[in-house]
Image (cartoon, rainbow over all chains, first blue to last red; front, side, top):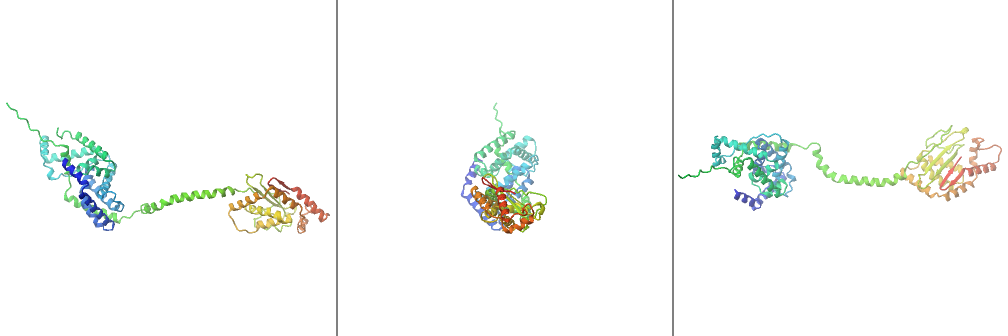
Length: 210
Length: 272
């Protein structure tokens, strides 16, 4: 896990990431020139990542779908204002995160979980079966309960802490990229990440390894 | 007896739980629906035109960037330009003496041919820092009142500079008074009020006390014109005593004028 994080951090400044940013920039130029269909390439490339972030922020799949669509529409409408100071994906992430924050602040008192099903390969880790046995429940049902529990723990975090841990742990962005998206310092990102993890560990203490 | 340690049941770490959460992904059918909804929203966004202010906000934003400082600069410039004019164009108090048998006429009413016209013109400037006051009164004797012209303030302002010049060059006070009325009624090109008052102020400043007394002496040495005699005769006994010669009448009028003209400091007053 640590190796994956380290590799992902290295990839931030890698030539591959730079080539990816250049490819995005050329597509953006096409869209600006009037090729509306070129925007579909950007949608196909980033829709799952954007959706995943917003879903983990809202814990509601319908809201996440709407907010993801809105983020792409807003990016499409504002693409002439994209200055190129940052990479396109950072700019798009910022639009998506800001839209999700606005939605969460508006619906602060409304929490309605609508959870996605976990993919099959992640359903059968060894610890999941053991926990299901201990709970005396079927593995499938226990997996659903665990998902609910994790989403509840996420929703107990503040919006900023939830965003940081989502971008870092779920999407695998670096501290620098998160700092750019959230327009704060890397130190703030590290601090928020540490606090979020501490909070999650405290909330999920009964499930974790003692 | 040997006791084997019980194997620790596998427990997840926080990273395991987060990885499990990361596995929450939508199905492929979800993406088909997502793409359809996005396409509709995209088309709606393309078809939708900005409404109201949103349509003009980019243009207004660009123009207001320069309009605000330009307007402020224009306002400051206007205030700076207006201050001298407003100081010079304070309203000049004009008094019109109302007497019985005095009727007001419009400024354009010709008064030069009034047979019994006597004119009082008072221009006084007691102090340098005070606003010049002007009083023009045109009246006739109560018995023979025929026509009186009351000059409007703007007309007065135009008349007073002229009357000062006329007093120095004219040879007949009464004719000057008649000319005063005719000039005041003559059409002149309109000038801004502020320029008139400025002109008046300049001329009254030029009229020093010494110049005023010189002009009084010139006036005092004048004879009454023969052309004005019919007017005096027709005015009745008050102005043309019966049985007196023309010379005597002139001398009496001269004394009368001398006693009624007064020069004090920088002010000139003529009384009847």
